[in-house]
Image (cartoon, rainbow over all chains, first blue to last red; front, side, top):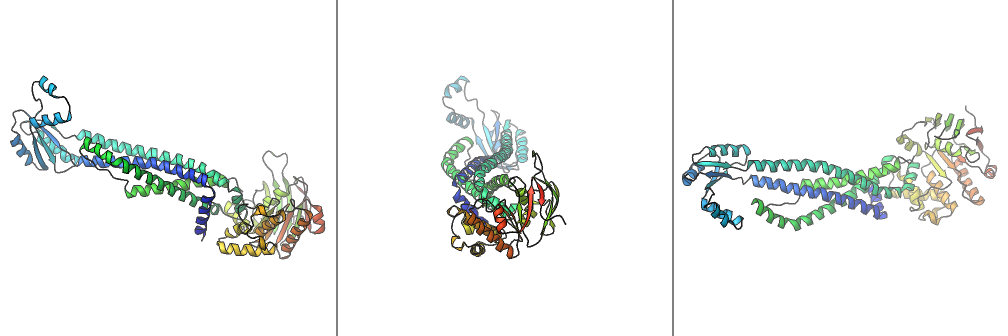
Amino acid sequence: MRLAASFGEALANLRRSPGPTLLAVGTIAASLFLLGGYALGLQNLTQLVRGVRGQVVIAVYLEDDADAALLSASAGNLPGVRSVRVVSKEQALKRLESSVARIEGLIDAVGGNPLPASLEVVPASTEEAAAEGLTKILAGLPGVSEVEHGRDWMERLGALVQFLTYVGLVVGLAVLLVAAFVVASALRSAVHGRWDEIEVLKLVGATDGYVRSPFLIEGGLEGLLGAGLALAALLAVHGLAAPRARELLLLAFGHAETAFLTPPVIGGLLAAGMLLGVAGSALAVQSVLKRVT
Amino acid sequence: MIQLFHVTKSYDGGERPALSEVSFRVAKGEFSYLTGRSGAGKTTLLKLLFAAETATRGQILINGKNTTNLSRRHIADLRRQIGVVFQDFRLVDRLTAAENIGLAVRVLGAGTAEARGRAERVLAYVGLQHKADALPPALSGGEQQRVAIARALVNDPMLLLADEPTGNLDPDMSLEILELFDRTNARGTTVVLATHDHGLIEKFPRSVLRLDAGRLESGSGES
């Protein structure tokens, strides 16, 4: 009964004071758009790292006199190898020419094709330890000059994702805190506009909780509305930006998957919006309650 | 019903205590005037009775319970048993007369329909059954005060406190309001009414507690 009445009062108050309500909803929407945008970027970066890890290729560079076919067969028989592909000196040069313009003169200047033939070995497992073990074995094969599997680069990217996650948590918390105070200050004018009613309620025996509850419900509804707006804006931005981002990723990493926020993150943003609204309202109403005896 | 024992109330920066060593008792069902010039301490004394202020020293008992240092929760409980009326009515202008009265009913957990029903009954008691849906600004001063009294009475309080309830009203309307307090007292409600209008006291003679510069000059002594 009381909850239904509080809901009714909260909805009536939203209609009565649209100005502060819009400001509060806008602040919540803007804060959550920033946080959600960050989360969306981070989520896709994490997905990219996972995807690229899944297609790790160990490059085995061969000495000029090595028998590529024999080494390919030897490598293919090693445990933990999914596939082996031979890249001849000529194929390596063609690849370089297709990615770097005006290279012909440079090749002539160094006296012919300087690129070695190589094997592209795809490990069966994407585990770091397995790839590292395989790299050591491949490096020990006769006729192999150098082996690369891009582990350092992957480790750096993984560390960057972890760092960005921590930064996101700290900055996100700070943004939420600032937003709560902005929302509180926006709602304060709405609460002060009902000072007379709060005074009367206290006079006739209302507890602080009774006075507070419709304001908290009102704040929660505003928070949900703000979060909904932020998610709608993020969905629109994602819809516009995702195709272009996929093109770029494909070009840069040979891997292109983008996704919108996962359901738990969407739920988290809605909860954060509600929490922001409730916290802002609680701060606003407390500023009046402590002055009403 | 009310017992005060050596109650002193001082405010920060005040030259002298607003109330000094005040002791008296008001029996259950009694009607007492609280008189004195402006600044004598009438409003402070009423505020102490409904726990809007706390005494600096001394003890206050309402219906046998010590109310000197109550928590906010217990203050709310106390106020549900006390009706308070002010000179400036303290009505919420954007709510109708019935809704203003309903605030006091809903605080007790009643729903909208019950609050409306009880508001209509008490409005009939104060003679304003036809004004249930009127907003306070559309009512005369006397009508607003009757709505405020209705709000104070809607939960059948054991004690009715009034701070200069006729201060903003003309003499005829003041008499009507006093008759309403008298009728309420006749039903068993203890009434303490602060006023400096001696004409009213003469027309409705009752026991008088007279304050002067924060001290009780005459009235019911400490038992």
